[in-house]
Image (cartoon, rainbow, N blue to C red; front, top):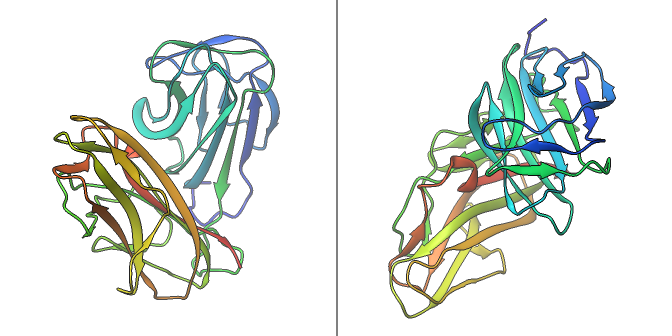
Length: 276
């Protein structure tokens, strides 16, 4: 069955119980099964999860590596989404939502050659998100879109490219229109660049129905020529059905902007419905 409205649960969780290599050209191996409702995972050096039915999937990976590097989700062998980072000092979790057709496969890779520890705490969980035709009380609403603008002078509404994930077609004309009332998590992940010396602040925020801007509360202080600053901020807010959300870039640092040379997963906004 490949119907996107198929409501059967699809869940897979696997653990890495032995050390193995992970890098940009080969996936990490999570070979010990905890649960796999559809036997969708191929273990070994060609580790992958193959979608048994079409739909939106949530991928969570917890990793501890030998060096610090990025953690990336690949779809059908092509780099798709940045999930976060892995280090040799602590366990870190990365998450991504992705749309898959039946037969599409995904795996998790590192930005540089690395080693997953074999402690058993490295694990990956993949869950299909149900998506009925109407927005139910407990239904997942999730959207993610890459940021397209580069040189910015704030306050400026961020331009968004074609969504990576949009369960309800809610991203329209660079805005998110809430399909149902609930508590939502709004977030931005981006790498900022400043094109000259002098310092200043870069602020990220959002506006609802063109009301005053709400900043995420963390300013990124730039102090050096072309000095990058990673910004990953989120906030929980109650939205009513039809509310319009705009994401905002603001700054006092001249010639600053968002680095769009990075993969789309490293310069994106996301929205998830998280509560009542």
